[in-house]
Image (cartoon, rainbow, N blue to C red; front, side, top):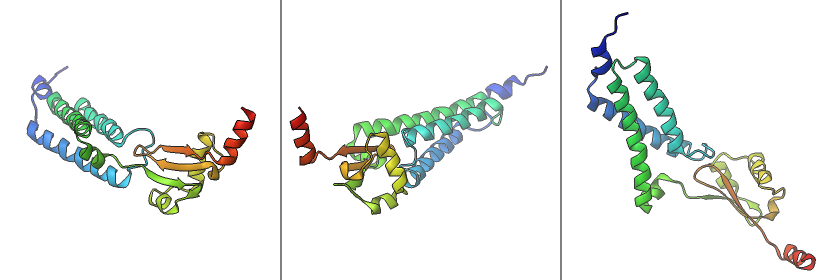
Length: 173
């Protein structure tokens, strides 16, 4: 068994090149996902999904030998983690930056009426929306005062407390 220790521990690519490549890929993918898939990721945030995907690929390259040395793989993983942390830190420190990274809630229902333009914008069908409402115990759209799709893809609902419903509660209470 012949192990090339030099190839394992000495970088074969300049570390600055790996850092630049990792930075450009992370930021490019972040921007593309923010524009194209901003609400498609469900309960995982886009940066979480991006980080998991890139870390899996980057660490695989470092472990499987696509990079010939461990420092190359470690540098790429560290670069990706750095950008994930940096964007989280910037959005925590700056409300302007947070608004740039996270989409504001988009209304889907207002006073029991579907806002079809917003639904089309996010590619949400009536059936998709009804599934989300039923999961929250609402079977009738007219009972919804407001519903929003949040930046992480979840749908939040504010129920309508109409006067007739309140009268019935008072009589029973």
